[in-house]
Image (cartoon, rainbow, N blue to C red; front, top):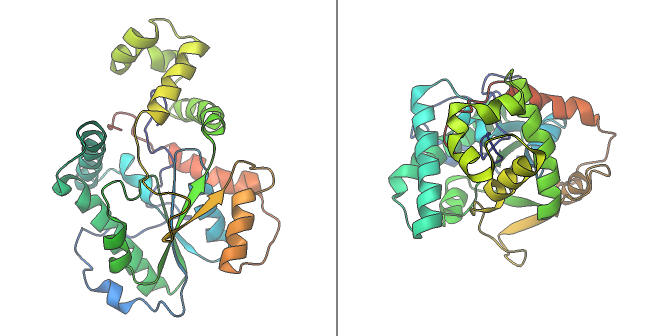
Length: 281
């Protein structure tokens, strides 16, 4: 999400040291779930809107011995098959939001790939595993995911919309700059013609803000309620106090240690250098 950037912006470089998920074709490990030693491993699926902090939390858990898979890596992958799956996934998101239905053949292959990567990581590394992803249960898929990864625990990073917007304005500007452009040049680019027609031909901070606001909140990506018993909400409005991490530590039984916030954040900024801004979101 975010004007001129990808809607699932916190993406992972599959070859980066911090995430390094095995890129396996969908269905390659259909029986892997049966091999996951759930009694000895903690298996976590974290959902959250862009800029909620889900990827930061995943990267933090990596520093505590977890294997982190950033599920949003599809919009920077160089693999044509993965790029196609990512494009189809967001076609399904748009269709579901506008029409109330979509073909599971559009979204299910990408999810299957994530499930396979998750189970393979659990079996091969023997570590606790965490996957962060911008989408959850939009297609009523949570029961299928839970069945495919026995022992999985779902969390949602919960942040107010006004805070999400302020974070997105800062982060999306940095993403554009990491791509070697300025936001003014991005705004003037051919692919932003429709955006300019709506928010103004000349770049303004007001137009940039409004564009981000609309793109952030015009579509639904996560379907759950705080009262649902299958998922735990992690409030994360206060980044300075590591609000969400403190709550998750308490739930998972992880002892508190001081966190190098800048070092953890830099892991994701390195991923962002590889974001393909041309992919649909």
